[in-house]
Image (cartoon, rainbow, N blue to C red; front, side, top):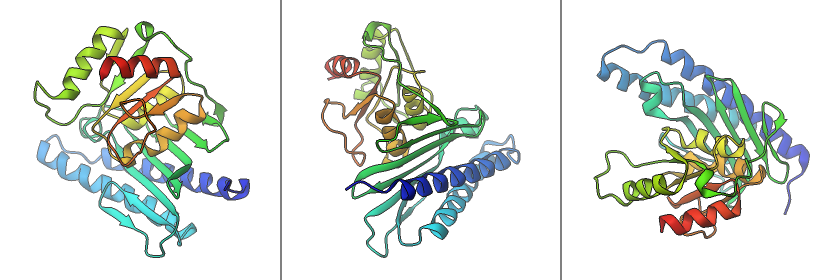
Length: 262
């Protein structure tokens, strides 16, 4: 069942406004960081929680009947709503802690497991990536498309790796395999911005087996609406609740990469 355009427009505006609010809070907290690692770690937790609380409050005020799932321990649906807001108030925590300007706020809306709205906001570049189901993908209001690259050997790839992996971790082995078959492979530290990059044609493919639903929900919709494809690592239908993802500019690159990594 499709949603009315008026309802989706209202949800998209709410998500964008909430993302801007969260981004402002993150930037404000960045200015308070001490050079001491312990202080920075404590502050980033406070910044993360403050951002999530502000986003949650803003959306809940407008859609009090909806459910929520967020990175910072947020999971509620007292009215058993089929709608769920999935929130990552700070994607790219390590980058944020160290002042590396590659992190974002990510907000998505699901209905009965189907993604309806996705927003990723980069507060450093003031870039707002948006998508509505069957409505296309946009960057600051301008349409975006994937690169259309179909040659794996010419592709730029991004990969997410687990924290402190062992040398024989399958994720490390896949990363090394990717280096042999793609033109270049990077690890950026923000899955949300990697997915936004695929949608905008800046990155040709992104993969991971170590992400959570709030890391990828908005980005999955963005890639789809920008003409790309998203599957699990085996090339099957993706379930954002399972940590297995390949997002690609074209079906061919997705298939070729799945063959390489499996």
